[in-house]
Image 1 (cartoon, rainbow, N blue to C red):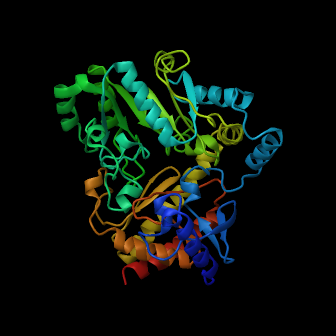
Image 2: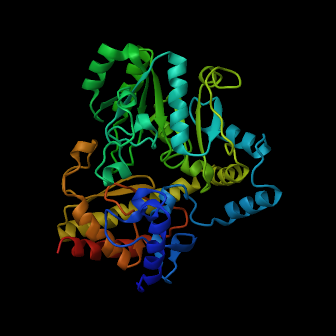
Length: 431
């Protein structure tokens, strides 16, 4: 790896111009040490920094790039659309076609409303749930991250965990008090809460595949219990599929686990690497949105044509299932390789995986299903491991609590190279 002098100089400038030098906290490398890479370009499975280094990338823009960086057909669709206009502020064909595509693949979805981010989608879906039920409270689960809306920054995951801030300054206590927090993978307290306060609960909000505080894979039985308890008490189920949507299956985690929510939020892959989000659900709920109903949502760039064509190109490329099959083979290859080096080296590490999403759990225990099962101190060896990987040309998320992503641009040889790098970096971490 070449001297990252130019990246360091740019980061010094960035700290002068932006809080922390970044537009999203985890990018600052605060949890792993050192200075962030300044990326010059990316192609396929690799990113290239301003210092002339290239890296096998498993961040993949935090999940949207299931087809890889600068996917040719997606880039061509964006370029063609840009030549016709980058924003209309009016209905257009690609917006309609993407809505119809989502409706055609996700269980139970009849109407789709586009937003510009996953955070906005969750905020709007929660407002709709409250309007539809006439109730104010929501239930969420510790470690699940649903964007940075005020009511969701309570026992959140993602960067809030990395920063040691399970909540956030600036969130009024009155708003936080409307969010009831439970632990994952335990039906008993959820059943007790709904028995006592179910009439106050508008929605039970959950990542069906929690992937912002490690990869906390849930049992389908737990998700089904959420579904049944919500129905019994007149509450709605809101699946946050910003990460898992179109990633683990075309129909997301709902298809994978066989549990159908009332409302769902999307982002990341939906926009094919261009900022985009959406919330969706049954028609009787979604028709309560303005202009048909009294629940307000609007957005100048919602349904932006660049995002719509990029999302269409991406989801169409996933239509025949071939990409999912290839990604499963790559994931299994990585899983087998990591199991081998862990066995041979005796490292207290496990690779947790669902399809093309993976996470290295720095513990010899069984993979956690709850945030409180992640061992204290896991971030320290991960930081050493991360730096060891980066120095050898493999880029992972700069946080022990973030997941990695495979793409259709990764090849078996890339996985083999990565496993070799993992082996060397683990020796560094536990020397």
